[in-house]
Length: 206
Image 1 (cartoon, rainbow, N blue to C red):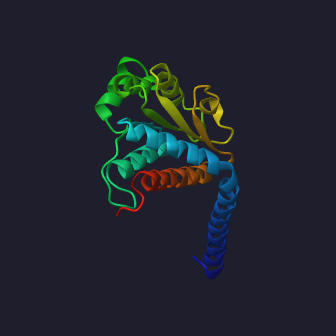
Image 2 (spheres, rainbow, N blue to C red):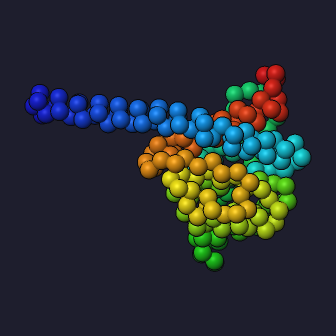
């Protein structure tokens, strides 16, 4: 590779890096105002649920499935402080359950069927979808409403069909066209929720 082509590759790389970093910074600035109240509302619902002996069921597809598992791990184990474990289940990791439901019914029911089996009135569904149009996540939100669960949705772009579900208690929507930037804000929101839950329930402990 010539020195000129190496320089061009380096410049292209720096452009990509700078664009991603600056876009992310600008999006976070916008979200300070738009997400502050919904984040506070969502965290209070979670605190009330957990204090009353309820649990949080989380779901999503692809990167959102990883986010659901990440969030559940932070609650069950620990986030930034030592405290008792909190009840959270990611409905994304049991291959036998997921594939049996997909095989016997349809992939669209892999989460709603688990909500029917595991959810109880007073529990919370954390429904994550970058596009807001994941049919299995939308179905889970509808199933949760039917059994008296509350739903917190985390979406992107215009919120999609999930953002339009009338039974939602809280919608955290990242109104941005870029899937990577949306997903980066999703994990930021989840970390903020973990901090708010910890501080509200266990503030002052270590």
